[in-house]
Amino acid sequence: MSQPSSNILADVINKYEAELTNDWKRTLTQVSVGTGLESELAQLCTQFLPLFSRAVQRAAQENINSTEWDEARNLLAEFSRLRARQGFTPTQTAMFIFSLKQPLFSLFRREFATQPAELADATWLSNTLLDQLGLFTVEVFQQSRDQIISRQQQELLELSTPVVKLWQNILALPLIGTLDSSRTQVVMESLLQKIIETGAAIAIIDITGVPTVDTLVAQHLLKTVAAARLMGADCIISGIRPQIAQTIVHLGVDLEDVITKATLADAFVVALQRTGATLSPTLKA
Amino acid sequence: MTSDVQIPSAMPLYTDDDVVRVRAQVRQFAVEIGLSLVDQTKVVTAASELARNTLRHAGGGEARLQILQRENMRGLHLAFSDRGPGIADIGLAMTDGYTSGGGLGLGLGGAKRLVDEFELTTEVGKGTTVVIIKWKRF
Amino acid sequence: MEKIPILRIGKVLLVTIQVDMHDRLALALQEDLSERIVRDEANGVIIDISALDIVDSFIGRVLSNTAAVARILDAETIVVGMQPAVAITLVELGLNLTGVKTALNVELGMAMLSRRLRS
Image 1 (tube, chains in turn blue, yellow, brown):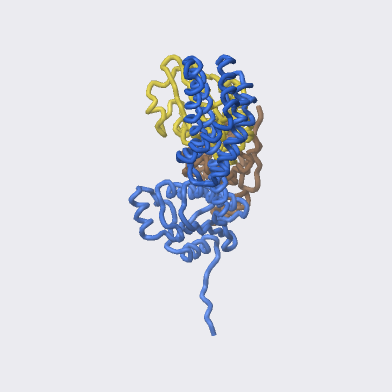
Image 2 (spheres, rainbow over the protein chains, first blue to last red; image 1 turned 90 degrees about the horizontal axis):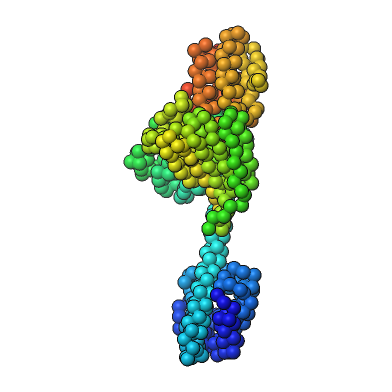
């Protein structure tokens, strides 16, 4: 893009800044940007326009990633992050920028009524730039959403069930709640780690508190049992509810080689026998 | 969107010791991009399988290692290529238990299960290239 | 050529693998072990792999074969100390080391062997 057309664009914006700001604010109330503090958006319009025109004037290319655009981008990034946190949609965020097109283009039509070449140039340039800026807001919005999600995932994983020592050489992992693939993986890894640390030869995985088991989770359970065996420890799965047993069979998952017990208590008895301990009833006087 | 952080360094694969060196380098990169211990182990094992394939089936070749950087993701991109005989039946070669080199036949299929992305290009008489990518989870 | 040392404790041979093994070294170990089982009249072998940070299909096969050969020579093999990450990876790879006995550490492996010998 040649220098002159960006100058023309900047000049028009500077000349009609007040009018354009007002038109933009009015457009914003008509398009879908979500309900929020109107004064906040209005203030942002007032802040953004001078940054926009200055960047247009200084930057040599139609690329908003150059340093001349830093200020404008920073302002928009802050706005997008705020919107992500406040629960707006990406469209409602990007519309802030896109809604500048209509007042800007009507201004051009009036200003360049007799200069079709300038009209086309100014329209094209501002269209290109505003599209980039709009996409930029969406990108920042998405990034901060991703950050929020990954932080929540992390927090969720940290809530994961602890591995407890039931007896000398016997560990238990009472699983509670819905198991998804990544949680299962984390839980299983920590079980195997605990086996190594404690030297426990038997681990009981109790799934009484797990409402459903899908193929992936069932396979993770099996893989854990297989991995523990490679390390030299045995696993017992307890608390398999009837529906889950049916699901497992239905899914074609083979639990043939795995010791399963109805309850944690049953599994504990087996584990005690395996470790050489014996249980005997004591008679009360 | 993908841009390379490191110039891919080509490592020769002609001896058993080369395989060990490739494994060590893959481990170093895996640590560098912050893979968990389990994921490090998986990608190093996959690299070991593929490096050995290159050595046994094609008599040698090279490994190219690079770190990938996306917006909020980092990954390890490994390419193993040779100018060996190529693979006539890819489906068969990927099957667990199939072997042409006297191993257990878990090399290709097994390596694929250990990584996030797997791509095999081969031409009979020209050679084979296997590319794998392991991404760091969030 | 470098070799992996084999220690003898009574009737048991103990091998601790501490290097990143290349394939020839693994094969040499397999051979050495079978010779030593006969020479030392050993009836148990413990292979400690706690220092190994990967076991791929080749090493896995060497372990299986070693155990199978030892069994024919009337010695029981126990692989001890496999790291969790290694175990998870092996399972994912599709290798279950069928026929190979395992224990968490050398001590438990020893106990397992002596129980077996008594019975």
